[in-house]
Length: 230
Length: 224
Image (cartoon, rainbow over all chains, first blue to last red; front, side, top):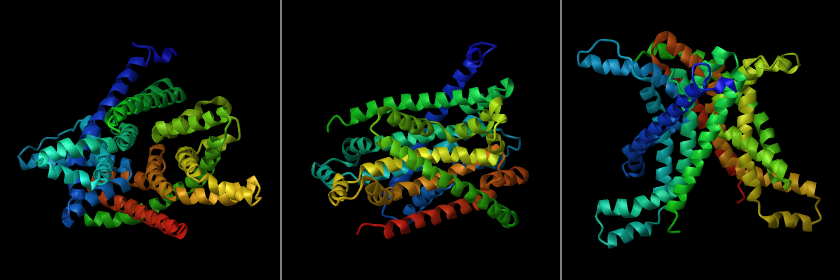
């Protein structure tokens, strides 16, 4: 237990900060994912074949390739890509990208592919009559989307989005390979310096379980809120 | 684009893909038995057995696969007693540690898939079996299991693909699977995009094959 004390002798405060980092990366990645879903869901639903093809390639490739490989692509390729763009503007110094940004972006792209599929499914399962009724009521495009379609989409999407959140939360453990100090990386450091990997990795598992447990409870509340009309 | 590197790295990556497939198939087979075992425990009416099976699947589904591999590979080696037993022959090999972690992980997901498949079987089918005088054992093996397998095919197909992506984590415990070799080539040549296209292409191809195999099986065993 003294291994977990706060201060210079224990790893408690380090692991606490690492847990906050995991939460921060997960939330950022989830938001990045929503932005991607915002772009690709309309493309998936569009009648244009080319736009369809783009959105389908995105979701198929990301969901068919291991997360670790995507992270390596961003970890090794991110710096090169940014430096290439910078060199066009005449900046030739070495640029190091923040591990947080690389990680959140890589996981965000992955979670975006899953979110896109969830939103597509939710919008498609809304009754056609709802769209027609909104038209009959004379609502404009924005009113139709924000007042009629979006609330119903959210109700249908929340259970599946909670799965996406769980996947995203667990995927953040893979960013530890890029050196970002989140739960997994901190446990690795602690295990290395105390030679007690069994304890620290088990403790990391407990932390992840705690995070999934608490977030499930919070999401259940959201579900109740959006289901109140049913 | 460095086409030459892409062509040169293809045979190495294909070789590594064989290791990925080996990891996948061995852990899926073991995981299937673990899953079936725990699904049956979940259907048990004894509350302790039930809770135990639920706890198993909750823990393995609620923690990242990476943690599970690290606990088994780095953590278990720390126990002095374990080093003196026969188990150590298996546990000192990263290959078997990865397979144990994968099998336990996929077993947890498989048990959930199978449990829900067993629960969707209509009671009328079991009653029909009973009224024909078939024994409970035969009903279970000849009626419930085949129906449950058919019911769980689509979800199990997804699980196979998720597991295939999961095997990439074997590269973190020094196994040179497809991702491991891809990372090695990237870090020696600093050409991440080219290697990603080749390695990602191989993964996508495997996903495609698995997807179609499951679709074929679904059609073959469909009720209509």
